[in-house]
Image (cartoon, each protein chain N blue to C red):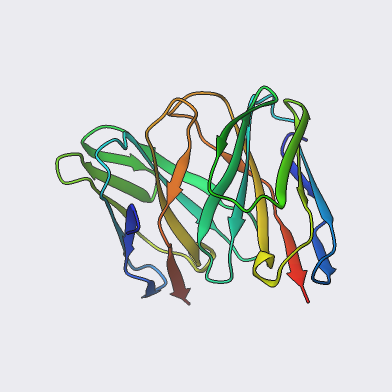
Length: 113
Length: 111
């Protein structure tokens, strides 16, 4: 099966803790993204990687740090989570090019208590 | 200001009816427009892309683009309850396909 996989499905943690989310795509794509979807369902891009290189870094708090070991994997670490970090984090992948479809994973729902 | 604006916020149509969505961009650098659909508990999935002026039809779905006014629309004919979802308009301007999404329109198709 070729798709975008995310783990965990959901995570509940307390303010100040560190969390990590994982994403893997088996579509052979070379560009991967992290999006944040808030409680109002608004989707905003956070980071984009092309062949393990960071190419897009939106205005995101410094406690967020993405990591890519190869073009099929993209992780997201959040140091010292805040209540406003509660959201669904969606990973996506695509082939490089302005006209290519992005394929999304199912998301990781983060709840910060 | 939101660079991609969608209307309406929500829409309710009877089964078999026509659902219509609108999207306007304020950034003339956007060249590629997409419609994505997100069912509850899932990630968004691309429905259609449109890059040239005019209409594009795929089955029950028709998209229309007017580049001069930066207006995109999506029409779903013969709507089905399974079409009930959140519909996003998205636009990009670069080779790295950085998408800017609108706020979405919730569609409810009632049997």
